[in-house]
Length: 109
Image 1 (tube, rainbow, N blue to C red):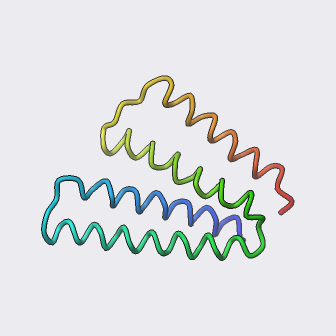
Image 2: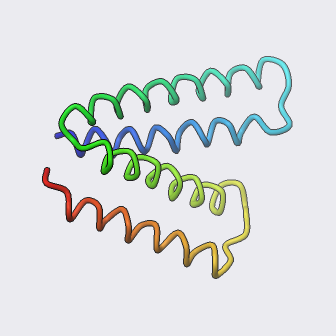
């Protein structure tokens, strides 16, 4: 169950990076609406990470959490914000995914 919570926490990290990306160039109420979404996902992500680390080792949970956020944010950048999908960018994201899977495989839980 705590692995599911950790995955949701990582997805919330992607949510707050999405909201932050949407604030680019905005002013006024639109800016603050996206910042409210950022704050919501940021707090939810941290709370869920804290819950997951009650039973998962922090040395595994934190890298998995940040890895999910990093991979998700890069994919959002490519598919939503039209950032370049270069060979090296995809290569290093693939190695990050392999590392996350490896941490899960060697975890005691």
